[in-house]
Length: 360
Image (cartoon, rainbow, N blue to C red):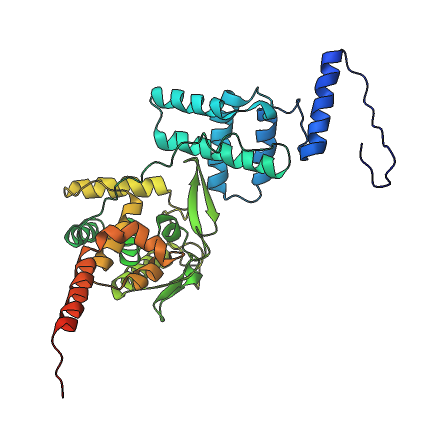
């Protein structure tokens, strides 16, 4: 082997059962010296994925880790686990993907599994366990986002009115806050009283409540760094929060100050997002509104703002998107009027430039 001293350096390995095994070991050793890739034939895909998943637990949010864990153990290990890590090929991933789709598996789910596998294989490449990522080119193309369903301002108003007149409960005020601010469901359900400032009519997003595997509720950090920010409150949203504060005080008369989570069940426990979704579906069906999800309430709020000619930059800040481009990508189709105004202004400018100039 090459050495820094210029003298010949010999390395020996022994204990192989036959010549074929010894030659294979020699080829792997020389490959590792040439490429820096440490080939380990004994390391299977299953063993590697378990170790990789364990290393990610500290850095992933509970809900994200639960999804990774589910797909690794229920999909990836059963499909590719017995293979040596160095034996995984793109054809294996492609064949599995096609079979899953042919069996009726949803394309978004199959894409998610392939994306997780590709992420894990990238980590193997970075750790010099693989020369290249066998799942990178075999992964399915990201499915097109489903069409976003939103209510009109009239439908949203009718829904809030129905909740206030018929129920006047904690759920009615939760819907008022979501539609009045564009907050995410987890941000509203994870809201704490100390983060609400009634006099200044603002609140601060510090937590989000998530459901892990639809079984365990978990408080975690907001979705992005930009999500952790101030949110302004309109008079009607402030009124909804004050109604909930009155309920809280009546339920906890021993507390001199508002403490804990703002929106809870009567027993003080957090509200499950699935229960909130069920309530949304039930109450909207009672007055014949189109069926939408909780996140669609956020889209409805954004649509109403944009349709009301609120500048897109202001909408982006209100929704706490990380960049203006995110807002444009999601809601760009809602801006036909702005596009018409832009081309009209452009035509007016060109027409004005065509006018003959007065010569003094």
